[in-house]
Image (cartoon, rainbow, N blue to C red; front, side):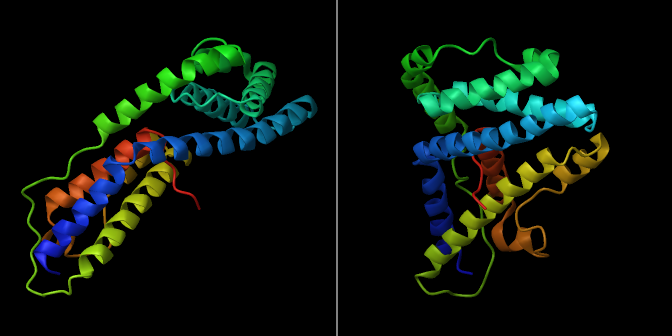
Length: 232
């Protein structure tokens, strides 16, 4: 792979992530709303099964924690702006208070405000979220070296950009999976330690360079922390 083509491709990929924080915001909001709708259904079943004594408390506990964290995140990115979304979070709150009130109150950032208050705060919250995304997305390393003697056609630069882009998406998906699986502490640490770009590629360091590989991992981590989720 020609060094210049890979550098061009990586810069194209970096541009996609760093110049479109609005896409990250939109994706985060859509993903959170979808997860809250799913949790609303799960918590409704928790409520029914709790009355019948048919569900472990641990499952209810995990659902309430996840719901509270999602509502917190939706607040911080200015995503509570419509009646539909507001009714969804109020429904989730009511279910959580009935099934696991102490857990909900421990995780939530205060009480649910009125829709008018959320709508008034949304522009400022949105701008603050976008600023955090822009600050957190790391610049492409300038001095990395990709080792290869094989020349490539000019259009390979774009092809490699798509490859790097896809690998960043895969890293985000894998990071989300590790988070969701609730591994035992040491197992989670082991999986996080092995979480890296192109893990099955034996010559990954020689082919891409450690700087670029580390940059991809860091970008994926920052995207995941900012709520970016890959659509299945």
